Length: 374
Ligand SMILES: Cc1ncc(COP(=O)(O)O)c(C=O)c1O
Figure 1: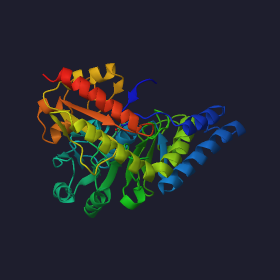
Figure 2 (figure 1 turned 180 degrees about the horizontal axis):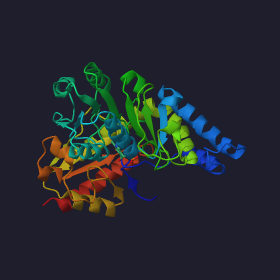
Figure 3 (figure 1 turned 90 degrees about the vertical axis):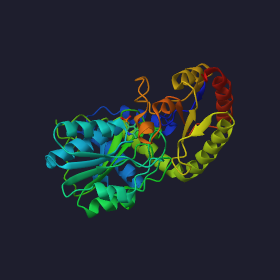
Figure 4 (figure 1 turned 90 degrees about the horizontal axis):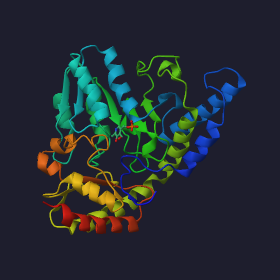
């Protein structure tokens, strides 16, 4: 790909290790559910992948479910658990990804009471605020580990403790974390955690849902009883295997990558700050891959298009809301005006980002800013 790709929170390039693992597993003919030897060969790769992903995450293999990604994991956690608690209370946050907000709204339309917490101006949910929202009938709390638009990192262990103290279960959407932030479902003591392979350099359309042992989660997809009855559908063996192998690599590299991206993030901030009218929305201690920048008086869409013409690829808030012309629900929830939200861009850094990329992006931003400020 030509150009400077600064949209790693939307998706990040496939790792060579993922491609190699995918190719190897894709050449296995068998269906992992078949009992003959061809099926067993596929099954062995699937289970090897599950065991290696589990070891990397510090969980048990039986606690990991392979699925189609973050959207499915989030939907599964909310919608399937809700079936066990008809009419129960759900707590989530206004700044969650739409993969959590939409199922929450669906439940609300079906008569489930839902509390959408408003975070502080930096996107943080305080344990006291969560405690105040909990009720005796709260069956689930869902709070993302790292926000995809502004990078705010929540204290998941503290929030999960508060939820458990009232008898509620806890789900975290940890889609933006692996490879950059420490992920620790066991230390966090969460019941459910969603992951998506294409965010750490695995293939698109593959994910993992962590389901704590002992949690009685019904399936979301009903069918042939695959994944111990938790998810019907023929296994995507190659995708799952490639996800697992690349996850191992991403988690191994995470501590060093965190430091490297933090330095690049600071460099990008320092460069952009020189442009008059620039301010930042990401907290300084958030996910180092995210830079959310507001250019006062600018039309964000024009900014994005002009950067694209300069060969710099960024995003308007989340990729999923890009193109809808709606100001980002995350920025509005932080208290920004519609006008400010529409003047905001997200740059997101990743494994392939270099200092030269940052410097070129800053130079392009300076040129473009002069054209689009109205
Ligand atoms: C925080 C968060 N949750 C969920 C998703 C959806 O994941 P997927 O693309 O695997 O469906 C994304 C991806 O944009 C995300 O950033």
